[in-house]
Image 1 (spheres, rainbow, N blue to C red):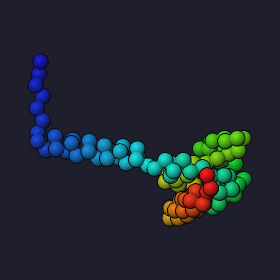
Image 2: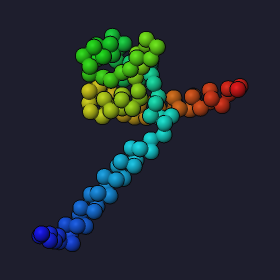
Image 3: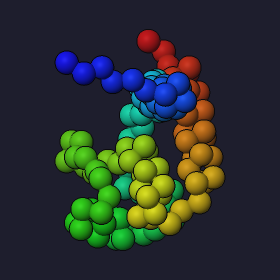
Length: 117
């Protein structure tokens, strides 16, 4: 059996990389569910991305953009749309996405606060 030794600097570098990976994983796991599961209609998604609903339909057909069917209607996760913008599949201003998300969460919170159970 061989004993492998490593230089202190190599070990330190590896530990820093492992810490960065762990931070990334934990950050991704800690996305609030309310933000992770924001579902948009075709009209909302098209408006947000500044494209027509026909272009959105074409992107669905070409499997360029992820979507899901909910009660026979197309829905788009906001996180999926953000990823498409990040990967430059769709050209959109990221600031617009952040503003939309903020406004959407605020209006949803107000609607939830006004409910009579």
